[in-house]
Amino acid sequence: MSQEKDPIYRVLFVNQGQVYEVYASSIYSSELHGFVEIEDYQFGNRTQVVIDPSEEKLRGEFEGVKRSFVPMHSIVRIDEVDKQGVPKISAADGSNVTAFPMPMPKATPPG
Image: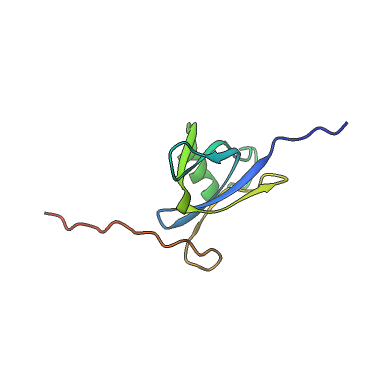
C-alpha cells in the first residue's frame, strides 16, 4: 500500500523588489480577481544548529498568517516538489530571476 503524501508547493513571488521563495501545502486561484491564495506555510524545524536569517525573517513575517493573497502578476513560479526546501528571500536583481515589470509608487517629497 502506497500512501500518497500531501503536496508541497514552492512559490516564488516578488514583494517590494525582493523574490520570496516560500513553501506551502495549499495554493489556489482566489475568488478575488487577479490574486493567488497561499495557505498552510511550511517552515523547517527550529532544532537546527545553523539558522538562515532570511528563513527566520520569513517565519516572523508569516507567523500567524492564515492566508495570503498575492497578486498574480507578482508570481514568478509555482512548483509542486517532493520535499520542502529552505524558504528564503533573494534580491530581484535579474541575476537568477527576471521579474515582470511592475509600477513602483513614487516617493512624495515631505511638506
